[in-house]
Length: 233
Ligand SMILES: C[S@@+](CC[C@H](N)C(=O)[O-])C[C@H]1O[C@@H](n2cnc3c(N)ncnc32)[C@H](O)[C@@H]1O
Image 1: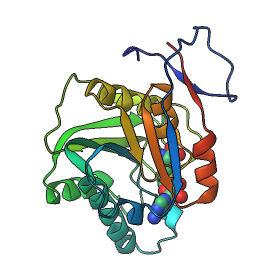
Image 2: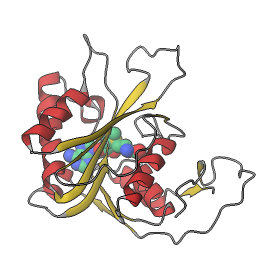
Image 3: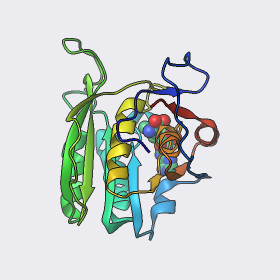
Image 4: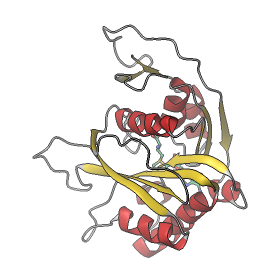
């Protein structure tokens, strides 16, 4: 995999770029249509998790307290499922709701309780600088936790979010930057327990990593099985 790979595109949604796509050996992909909390229960020793925990609207929670309880349990299961040298990266967007729901604050509390170190906290831009969004901030968090993993070679602190497959998906450019950093740490298999439309698993495969995805929504599982991303080098 080239460390300086260029832009990504979802197959069939955009015209081919002018640069020629360089062949990388594609990774394998397995998608399980399951409840992620059950799938994660008792699991340990994973190399790496990269995920976006569900949005409040996706689960139909009415009260922030109930959503927070689910969010914290899901975060705790992700954090305890990786090996000591493993990494957990959360890609999350806050919500403006009677104030501000700060998911980075929640995740840092979960990380501390799990004895994990915050290796980095970066920002993916969702809107242009100077613009605003009524319901969500114009940027998303990208946080990486580990017990004994290395910080390694740093990458950009602020990145463009990039193309998204649906409103609650994470942007491909940001996911690419995270996965390229993980590749440099020696990670070759990525798990996304809330895989959604498959941005993380498709990008991992495009970069030559194996990937496992879990989602309890059958339609999302189908999308995650089919999504192909081409990384132009
Ligand atoms: C924020 S979306 C993930 C988006 C993904 N990163 C992407 O780019 O498409 C969260 C996903 O979690 C799924 N989900 C919600 N609760 C779940 C649970 N208990 N177990 C497994 N999946 C769940 C939803 O169906 C949704 O697809």
